[in-house]
Image (cartoon, rainbow, N blue to C red; front, top):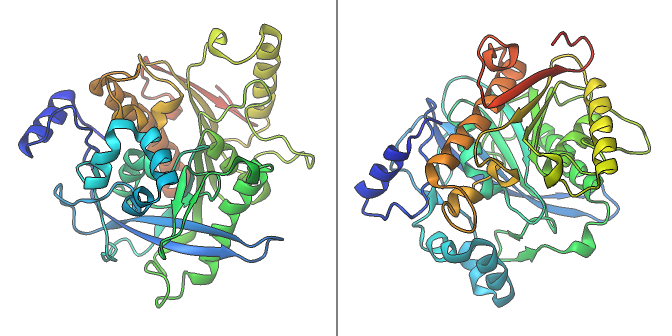
Length: 386
């Protein structure tokens, strides 16, 4: 994503909107964006688990004027008093703009056809943070899709702020239902891959049948969702790469720790904002133990893994989502130009890592041939030379 502060303001002005109204930047990849949601039920678990999974995919039609709902089902959520209160609290003054469509994505709805070439696309299975929603990562997702990836964004039931199902049901977050949070989230991630193995050849029931390359799959998540992705990768070698976005669990560990002792089976990108000790929710001793554990875990990763710390002004835990953009200049969030710059950094490292592992592309930011003063890049894992 390359989007200057001036470009942001001009784009908003051209369509008659205030420059204070958040705009999701138009991604600069070669593809347009489609989106379709599926209501899937995992019947293999002790208690069947129902999930909404949204597939964002490349299309031929790349138009800056394409508008899709920022949050599908928002009107239904708003019609339920309890959920309306929940969403209005989460999105604040922007909730009416989300409802009206003034804040929108660039995803074409209604089953827009996928791009004809290439024949198959690599897949990224994405997990949102605790109390969030996959749609709060629209900037990151659209950037990847515009560059030829399919992103399967899971709405983790009872973990998401609220999940809308096509027949009108809305299920809000329920902390009592998430006792085994990481294990259940990881099971959600693996279930999506299982289900894709069943429907990827079924053109009657799956829009992208035959178009997803199940040999080129990565798991990615932010915050709690990063732990879902990492745990799924510890358990499942079908994932070829793992992206952990600011998922460190201070003061416990950087990556999931389970009784089975499993470690990462595939290259890992541990991409985080700089977190000085004074900002950690830990004592000095706990912080030292956490950093020691983090170092041990990262060294145990396979070759081709990287730890990247971003130290740009204004970057923080929410920067990996759309939240700072929705509230730019408010509630302590940076101004829009700073927010977009930080998103650029996050997207650049994410693209390079996925490109290297799923497309065989070069990765100058990771291999050291290109350096950014705002990023510390360390090759970690077995066989690391840097």
